[in-house]
Image (cartoon, rainbow, N blue to C red; front, side, top):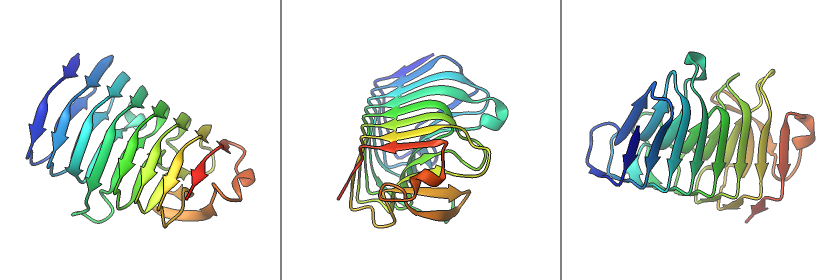
Length: 200
């Protein structure tokens, strides 16, 4: 399945929702003024490429989720996600959310009311690399799960500007439980590799 080159505007929910679709490519779509998650890859999928999309004006930008149903194995690269908003407290406000076996690279996220990039949710975090992204004017830069038993995450060489709640913050589900790990304290979590990030 390839979903490419569409212009989707003013949808009540999602622009593109891939449910249990393996080996899918979602490339070069323009997704604006949406009511929920702009681009979903969810449930029992294996293999998703989400690249070079523009998302402007939605609750959540891109969500790669549902490891509990077998969802895994993705790349999220080169997307622009901006002007997010929250209408449902606790349910929205992330630029990009991923869980397992996923690379998040070369994206630009601006204006996320919750976090630019959410890496993991509870125990659902394994083999995630977050590298070379720019996160601006967002409450947090990267929110990474530090629940006991989570897998490896690499967060390296990203640029964080005006992330008042912290550039990299350890989370237990909805709760922030660390200081800014980009600055100090990352050594407490041997499953995390944090290096080379620029914070301003």
